[in-house]
Image (cartoon, rainbow, N blue to C red; front, top):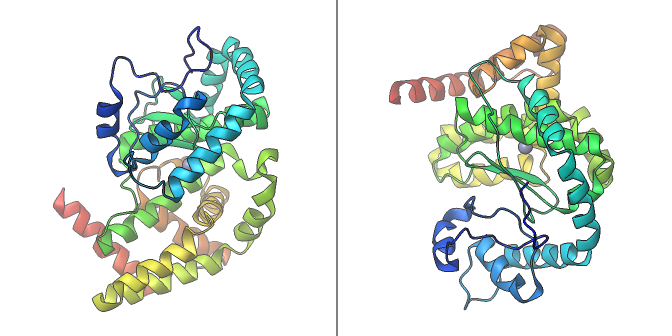
Amino acid sequence: MPLDDHGLELVRTRGTSAESLYENLTNGKLHPVFDIYCVPENKIDQSARIISGISPNKEPDRATQRILKDCEDIRNNLLKIEELYRSLLKQERSIIAQSAELANSYLPDEATIGNPLVVLLPTGRDGRVLDGVVYLDPRLLVELSLDELVRLIGHEFHHVGRGQIRPFSARAKPDFEAYVVSCMESLELEGIADLVSEITEFKAFNSFREKRRDIFEDYARYLEQFQEAVVKGYCDPAERSLSIKEISSAFYKEGQMHPVGHRMATEIQREMGKDELVACVGDPFEFLRRYQITAKRRGLFVFGERYISIMNSLEEKERSSE
Ligand SMILES: [Zn+2]
């Protein structure tokens, strides 16, 4: 978390012009030239547009509006954020080391997380990883306890390490089969990372804590909906766009795949132990296989034969194209 003497600075461009920054921000991807992002008032609009990738002469869309609101919120709490940030900087090494240790405890040997850059940026009270860089919303510094902050960074570091084994392909892919595989990846990568951080228990996330607990308990319902939509779309190409919509609402509308994946990972660990779970990191198909064995043994929700055979053929297809 670098911070220069000007205090919390906006987009530190390292000599890059706003125009070339903008060019780097295609497909909603952020370029790691943002070191820290707390916006001077006269730059809020421009910055929000840069982050959301919207051109300066267009009306701000919903994403931009949200970023604008986030920036204003951060702006209003800047003194508090800055104070905390400065005190955290003194323990920066220990925070990063603890987070790395946490992430490493759920990573296989071949995944190394090195020393990832942590950047403060309005991300809607969340953390994100893009191209091996961790982006954290600055408000979380104030809202999380130190222990929670360490665990949240641990969660993001786990994504960084996992990315060394298998780069995550975003679920925005138009191809139906790739979309289904990326859904399985979401379960594996967020499920295991949530086990690293136990994020559901964070005080700052009180508003959705109950909801996540309910989904964790009732996780089979979401898997059933997901399975049904996948089988339908796989068997009938005419149904695919509808199927994608159904999967999206069963899984992503309220971030359901987080607690669902968390539950699957938890059950695998309970039944087989941590090492067997860690062996699934970066392999969504193996995660599914181990979950399936676990579920049969423990009398939990088991995927149907049709779904499993679809996954097997998707895995085979992927292997043969490598
Ligand atoms: Zn995550």
